[in-house]
Length: 356
Image 1 (cartoon, rainbow, N blue to C red):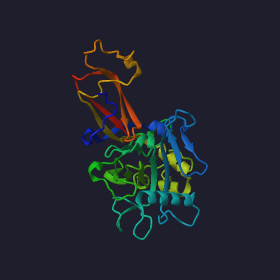
Image 2 (tube, one colour; image 1 turned 90 degrees about the vertical axis):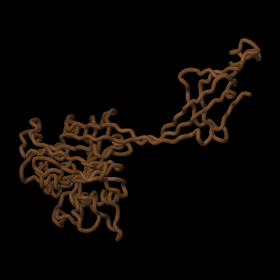
Image 3 (cartoon, rainbow, N blue to C red; image 1 turned 180 degrees about the vertical axis):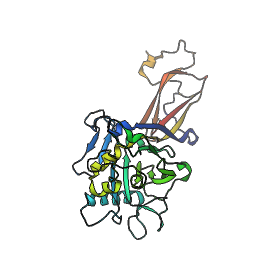
Image 4 (cartoon, rainbow, N blue to C red; image 1 turned 135 degrees about the vertical axis):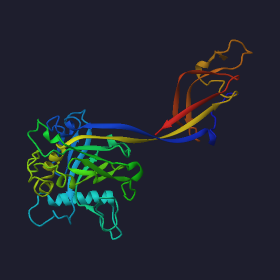
């Protein structure tokens, strides 16, 4: 008997979940000015800037990340005197805190906390730099324990070409994040970023990394306490002692401050994660199944072309497997690399996998 459809049993279907990882190395020269900042896009609203791996007007340019900054309304930097873009900086901080930290029981936005302890009394990060990575790079999330960001921390600066600011480096990593991440964020899992360098004690807490959101929150202490400074007025890398991060936040635009910070980035790398869900269908052709074909070319003048004599057993060649709904609606097809001979003397099991 010719079999056209065969119902899959429960034990013929297996679902699996796999995590795939890809290394994402981003050289600091791309971030800090390989293309004379032609790969950096600024906007008329002036609230953030976007960094690409190629001049952003090119059709082959890929978005790497957005960078911005802000401070809390109760920060010591907030005041009634003239502050460049103060409302925007406060609004940016509040928006990022709302999305990443959520609200407390009173309905107030929770501030970023140095050690992830949201209870009252913890050290709050009230002045922050936000690096929002493109989904193209992070995929489903950043893999825990793989994030590394290096800043040029040298106090000397000769010229943009000399790159003396990179004579001393500060390394920021999500050390031990695979086993010590936090889950008290509405945006998913996050961990503490630790910094190490000649200007700071080892494993100093310098920020937070949100894995599913793909956002790094860097504490202003990196730039105020540990010597990474710059010229906020021009966005240059001048290491004049008076140009610390606080003067950036109060006296420079977001664009110029982002330029100065970006020019200090020496290297950046992490591994992304792609969650691959698969369903495997074991399509079994028993000895009595699928020995005939409905293909019009199977017959010539009412005779089976692949049989030489009347007494020869029926035979077919399987080239395609179709998966159908209960209403016999074709949902997916799988093509074999070469035809498989099927007759009453053999049985076949074809493994069809759907990834999504």
